[in-house]
Amino acid sequence: MHGNTSNDSPQKPDLRERRRLRTMETIRKVATALVTTHGLDHVTTEMIAEEAGISLRTFFNYFTYKEEALIPPSLGFPPKAVAAFVSGKGLIPEDLVLLLEERLAEMELERKNIRVIMGLSDAHPRLQSVREHIFRQYEAEFRALLGQRLGLAPDHHRPTLMAAVISTSFRVAMCRWIEGDSHSMIAALRTTLATLPTLFDET
Amino acid sequence: MHGNTSNDSPQKPDLRERRRLRTMETIRKVATALVTTHGLDHVTTEMIAEEAGISLRTFFNYFTYKEEALIPPSLGFPPKAVAAFVSGKGLIPEDLVLLLEERLAEMELERKNIRVIMGLSDAHPRLQSVREHIFRQYEAEFRALLGQRLGLAPDHHRPTLMAAVISTSFRVAMCRWIEGDSHSMIAALRTTLATLPTLFDET
DNA sequence: ATTCAAACTTGCATTTAGTGCAATCTTTGC
DNA sequence: GCAAAGATTGCACTAAATGCAAGTTTGAAT
Image (tube, rainbow over all chains, first blue to last red; front, side):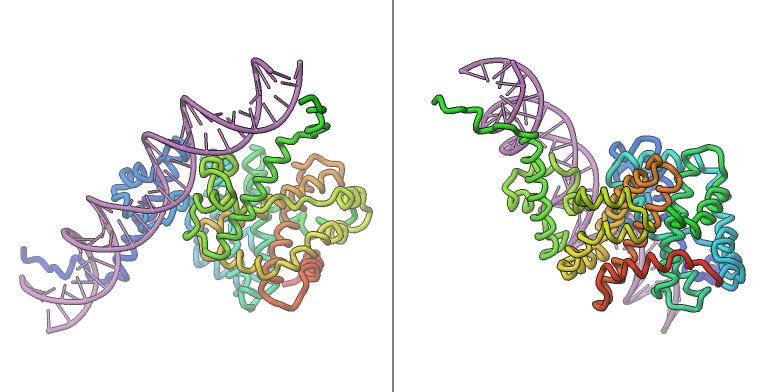
């Protein structure tokens, strides 16, 4: 009874925020798991809610439509890597690969799952749309970082086009990596980025 | 009675096909018109069907989900322009601008409408996803053409990456064109494509 | 501790999206 | 003209999605 009740919550840098993020993450995990095993049409929002331990209504407080729960969160680069990239002096594509290294390594372990998800979204028109959307999110992340590095507003021409080209390269590399079992993701990306400068040379 | 009943349909290179395409086009027109004036949430599939003179059930025979009716058809380049591009000897970006010239001119007249649509799809998550999807369709078209021109399978590395970079450039140019009232669409695209070769030079 | 307001969750009712099925009408080949 | 294939429709039904109001939890103030 006594104890120090104040100990239950000494200093909370937004406990609510944390809880929200945690449930959001739970929903995402549950949703993708269910969909990868049963397919989008055989998974209802109600199933997801139940599995995640929340009410159906709450599901729609977190996500505005079912498929949104399948969109992964931002790449979320570690601050150290971000700092290194922003103040990097090398060639941008090279520094970018370094920035991505950690994420790419994680993806390496998930190749099978990723392949399944990509397969499903190839089949389902709604998931196709959503998939495109995801890469556009990554693009926004890249644009912000490039803006910082170049000391320009993120909506300036240069970072905008750079981010667009990079995210599309990322996507192309990812597709190649998924198809062929040969390359590592990082190798695929390096190759793709290296091709860019001479892409339109000669016919 | 007699007459030549065969006269009603002398040589039909698929009349059914034509009818289908015509109604599809009608639905698309009606849907985009309704949505641009009232917003996506205030337009029901029933309204669209009614306005297009078909039953609700038939709407879903043509499109699998509401937003799909808002996706414009393929760019549909005129055969002459296609042939010119495929056998073109100039630089690919230059020849590409020629190929697109006609479409870009049409878009020039529609700038206001296009801006409205882009605005709506910025706001609505589902339309965001669909919008991304559209550019990916264009990319597939580009890839097929580039494959032909280069004499490679369309899923070969080179045409794949080229098409990806081109479609993303197209998108970036289009965004610029929509925002600023200054440039013509074609000028914006030329500038963007011209920037590509030196994009990552120096820091 | 008590209290209070803001944030969060939930149930309920309702509208709309979307699908399967069977009946009808239309086209086309013969 | 007739039969088969194709397209349209109505109907019934499941699931997605939203508004509202009532309940619960949380964080901070006294």
